[in-house]
Image (cartoon, rainbow, N blue to C red):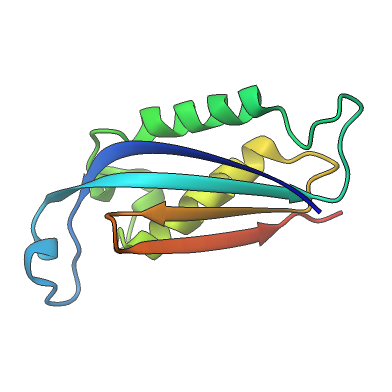
Length: 127
């Protein structure tokens, strides 16, 4: 099984609701680090699992959507607490839609909100 892993980072804001999480209940910023992992059993005709330039473009688009934004205001978080877990799932599904290819079997995202805390979401591509 081959894997390609890329990282990017951005700063975004959020606030949590529905519980008492102290400072997290107030608008606050996180320096998110996003790691995306693409897996597949075969390479394409060029010897690549995935075109890294295409992945970098998808990550740049993603950064443009979330950097310096309040997550609570974005439609994909409508009615959802903008938790790290929800954010990881939303990002993974978005990237899966953009990066699906016949030789890819899965995609995984790990999203760090600081040096100690991360959440991950993994999705398998249907053959």
